[in-house]
Amino acid sequence: MDNTHAGANYILMGLLPRLEELKPGLLNELALGISADKEAIIKSGQMNSEIEQVFLDAEKILGRAADT
Image 1 (cartoon, one colour):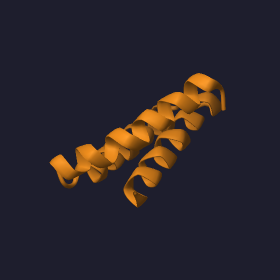
Image 2 (cartoon, rainbow, N blue to C red):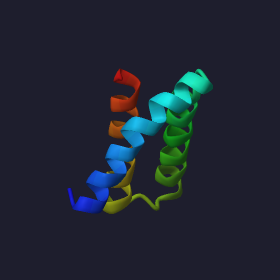
Image 3 (cartoon, rainbow, N blue to C red):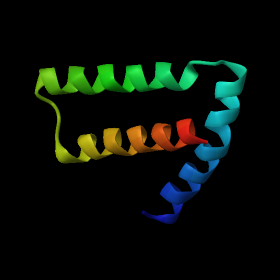
Image 4 (cartoon, helix red, strand yellow):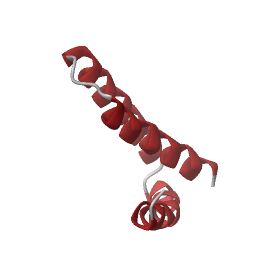
């Protein structure tokens, strides 16, 4: 993970739980949106390893935020 990626993760780990407090269910909504986008890209035949990694990273970030 490069420093920019690590910094973005750090900010999101502080921001996402606070947003969830303000709008309960937000993290679930984000997760559902990510899942739908991923499925649409797969169905369109446009998925590649780089795009898949973006989705994996996003899912990990949301998972960690939900655990805090």
